[in-house]
Image (cartoon, rainbow, N blue to C red; front, side, top):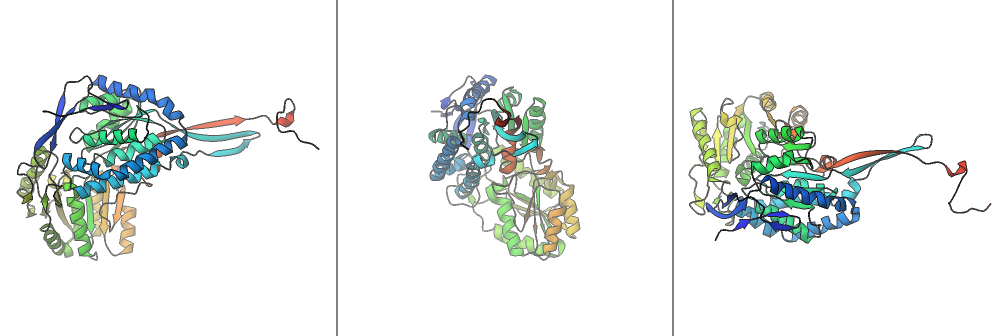
Length: 497
């Protein structure tokens, strides 16, 4: 019997009006686990209406009340995170330890949002003119839309909705239809924490649902994470419809390794950052820029470490799971043919890996390519799989130039023991997030996440101070109160001479 995943609107599960559905796979088995309902325009409108109806009361709820609900949600999520990790592994394929790490990083943002009363404080200037004061307050936007990707079905929504809700907004979340169950789980958990009905809604769907959110006149903002072409489309469409937008796009993240680097540390970092979550990370390291003099040695050490990795079902204590769909697996595999045609060397071939899992899973093993030319699409495209490309460079300057010429600017890293080189790199590189001997420089929750160039569209990054700014609007008040000494009525406390 087919199982269907419904929308979560107004505090309850609803089927909606649409009859369209999409299969949800267990990628480690290659089998369909359920069907998810795909929203129609009217379904999205119902969710937005529920959020709009809930907004006035939630906006007017005290900061103490909002904070209490956020704290309760945080405790429930922490206590039951193993349940969520199992959901992530069953629908995305990432190994359980990686799923647990995803949830932990999302919890950091919930912790940050719990401090919202402090973050919402305005400013006050007394006596800017005789008897005149000016002060500012931060208020919520209203109904906000969130569109999240398949690769982090828990963490990315958690980047946005805790801050939005703590600031007094109401939310409509459209998760990826490829692994949608985590969104419902989070919404139901928030309801259990005491969140009023309609404050957090989930609609499942495809482009029809996305466009309905982008064009809906009641939705005040859109938060998005995904590929660069879609991020650009989200930004342009939502902005044209008068909305605030933060649209985080794709990446081709480089790691520059200088001759003085600790090569064991660099090799470990390259493997961890290149193959974790099967390379399906916007912050994955996909290009190693290695100075020629240490390239052979580093490639050898990486290949040696790769031989110890175990690919298989994420529920079986493996190091790396499957890719999200068979179609995506085949697309990633096609780049190896391109690499060979373009003259690259296939050091480790992941097309036919030994696996600990069902033969029908969407398997592709860790892959290492050397001597990748900059002219190859293997270098320029965001492959979004466990493919690590080595580009050999003559110097720091050549490596920096290659990074700065990339159309992407999400994350980058340098591995070196030279403090001067590291300081120069962090100043000169045109990338939004930089690691120094740290391969995946995702900021902690009280800083903000976002790239430069074609990796980011919009003015506000995710979470941190910029996230608070994005989900609030400032109001400035100029006031004058007459001094009681001018005469007239005075209801102040009586004084005796």
